[in-house]
Image 1: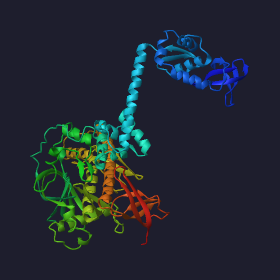
Image 2 (image 1 turned 90 degrees about the vertical axis):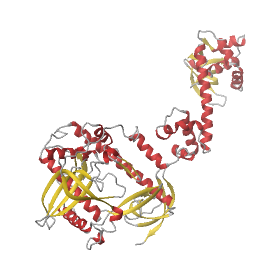
Image 3 (image 1 turned 135 degrees about the vertical axis):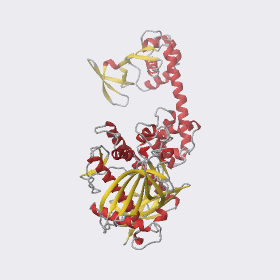
Image 4 (image 1 turned 60 degrees about the horizontal axis):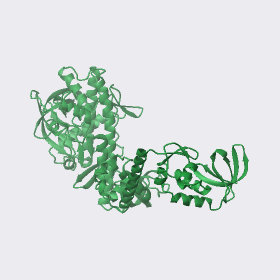
Length: 612
């Protein structure tokens, strides 16, 4: 005796070897023996096993499923019952098996109700299921068509209005994404690289910039409507001619300096900080903008300012204009010790905006000891000596320290120029030391008078933001409250408000324990780190663009650690997997094999050591 049975969703046949209560031992045509449950047996027959399933499958293929469905009534039925109605006679085993196989293959037409038992799908359900099946078939054909176009590096026309979704926020339920994913699997290329080959990503720069904007500026970078800025006109005018020192690309000029000889032989040095807090009031529309953006976002060749231009221009310390400022005056003795200081809110006349590129040739390490002929040389030299004195007072002066290199990026018409500048150069030290002093001094004044502020502290090597006046060990100061870039950083704007309230004897905008102050601090810290990461990412992008632009084939580099190297001439570090085991500091020559600004990848091959 042979049996036709169901196992794991498929039909099988076998010859019965032994029969036990509830189970059978069967042998398949190819000799394999299995134990099956008696309940799984659908038919017992005497026909030879050979050819049985082939005949049954062939018979099932010949059955018109629509006609078979029409033969059914509403009640449940067994496959043998339906086979009798379909064939018009008691079915033989092959015919009965054919009907069972056909029923099993058409789940939209027939709902399973148990082993060998079914129920015909209601007409409305069947129509809906068939329509859905047809839609899936058409969709599958469309996906296959898309896949072939993508593999041929052609962008399907239907992808036009879906590119933003595909590039930045894929919807895996769309046909476009399914096609892109299938093409990615078949070609071994990433989704983004495939889209690039199809011309969907015209600019790697715009792709990276767009990703940043989508996440952090989803509403775009245009400023919402805001009220006009009122610049105070009742401030006393300072008797100084101030000058600033900035990069040529700087438009938000926050700080300037003045220097004046006193009759007692001392010198009065003025540190003048733009005072936008006098026109941007707490709770105003501009205040909301500053607290939403929190900082200017910098990147080579571009920036997203914290404040709109109408709020920057009246306060930026532009040459030839009087500007409101928070000034810190230092009375400096001939030995460059500070014997007195005074803070004021006043109008300051800006005489000159000095720029790094034109100033540096006249004011650098080589020109410190001899007048270079620059009209500001004497003032700059005096301020530099004060800066060195302040650095020594902080315990950070080290004449033997090897200078670190900073890099400036200049992008014009898609071309990038990368220049080196030694960190700690006379220009840098002059500005940095006076800013550190002002931030530390004003932070101390706030703390002494019980007025809360936002501080940047460092203890145990960890840098953090706090509303408490805690030491900054890295800078060597008792406290450090960012206050000198109020046009570019929200915390500086907040601290400036607090400082001006102290000087003018008014109620500070933020009282002790004010939750808004803590919230602003946390939001700023989060945003500032994100913006810094983005700036570094875009600098890496422009480094790669530079290698392409200059058609660089070989580069020299310094081993940093293991297989990580730092390239010469640009601020870029990369892994070189072919690098042999070398000590940190070893110099190597590398072959540039592939530069991919879109994926931010640089592939280099070790060429040899450079003997120093």
